[in-house]
Amino acid sequence: MREIGINRINIGVQSFDERILNFLGRRHSVKQAISAVEASRKAGFRNIGLDLIYGVPAQNIDSWLDTLKQAVDFSPEHISCYQLTLESKTPLGIRYQVGEFSLPGEELQYEFFMKTSEFLEDAGYIHYEVSNFALGTKYTSRHNQNTGTIPLTLALVLRPTLFREIDAGGIILHLIDTLLRSARGIFRLKRQKS
View 1: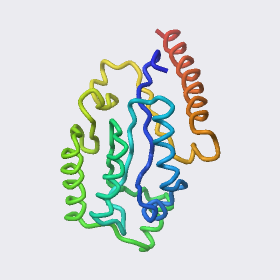
View 2: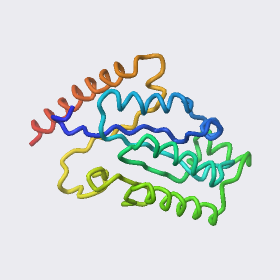
View 3: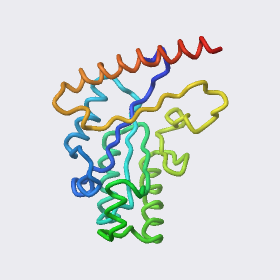
């Protein structure tokens, strides 16, 4: 895995609040998200990223801070915190268009952003891009930085549901094997074109 530069696994946790996951229509549960993070550590990943979403209707600052606390308890090397955005043709976007819910106002969105930054910085994370936090510069994501010097970045975010019903260590090893075979093919194609 390291031979081709894969050095981090990102898990699309979104929230450690079951109500928020249900609202978002996510297929995984909090329990599955926790299992995915634990299985990733057990499989040997030493650079784990968690993706989280804030600004969800029915979410308040306290429930968001609870999600951040749970995320930090796993000591992930990277945390991405995205403000909820809606796409018009998605199920959530359609629900919004028919007036099923409203989004938090600008002041509350600003408070989410500021509390996120404050909480994660107090926990030792560097706030290095709008949505990104790392436990030191060693763990910052390079896909948006120095793009002229990086020949290829392969970014994958795993859904916690991938870990359901399968030995977590086994599935991660299977995914790594599949990624390695795919990446070797990409590098062969790139070399042939050069």
